Length: 106
Image (cartoon, rainbow, N blue to C red; front, side, top):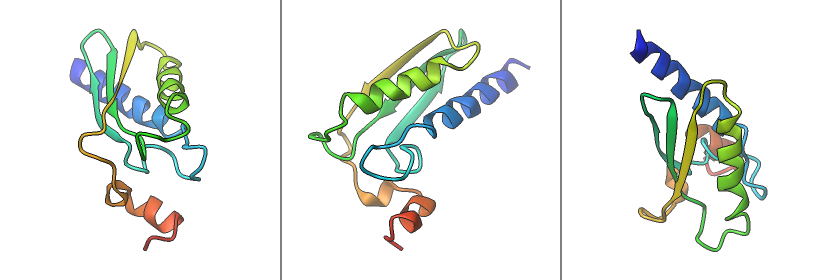
């Protein structure tokens, strides 16, 4: 039973992340491939490992904070930790097919 709840919360976290957009690109950060890892721990703590399109991204401070705020709005979430990494470096191949189509890469 608890596993189902955890999986449902993970789905809600993904849905929340999909409401966050890079201000310069009309695609959400999940489809853009900026999310490397999502972990939901037993007490509903959420950990997200993410990157940005580049280390010098103008929205470097805005996107992680917006992501954290979006996840914190989910009922039942206790704590949210966002970690930024640039390893591996972001490439356009990390985008979903949907994002590549949207941006004209396919």
